[in-house]
Image 1 (cartoon, rainbow, N blue to C red):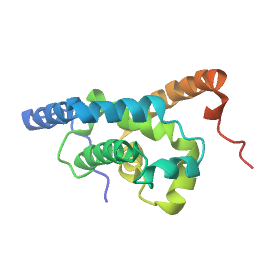
Image 2: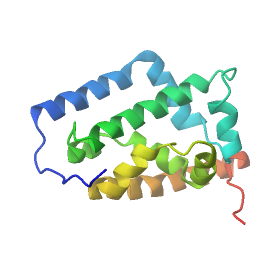
Image 3: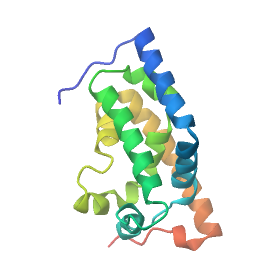
Image 4: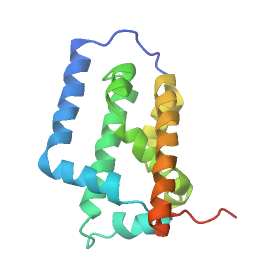
Length: 161
């Protein structure tokens, strides 16, 4: 896709989309899914990710699929020019959080699933505001992971060869 310029002013239609996305995030099952994926699911390897994401018998499988597909859909709205990138970035953090959270295992996951978080990654590459937000979120996630590793070493990423 070609690079779309960022507009300086969002429209009322952009605001309506952002508010609808927010409403969807508030749905009861989605809230539970988001809480689990963001707070409790910290896979240290691609295999740990796939043990949940590709296992329909795992009780959290639907949570992973629901949350990641929601944020990939939201990023696609921006990439296709449906909603202002600047407004989207100003109002949303979670998709960037998830990309940062999975960054260390991204290559391993993409070996089996090349489209894993591809739209969110593309958003970061194409829009300076998204790249800036991602860098901030990534530092926060690194701090969170360090605190988790102290409390529970299973959250440590294996050393890279």
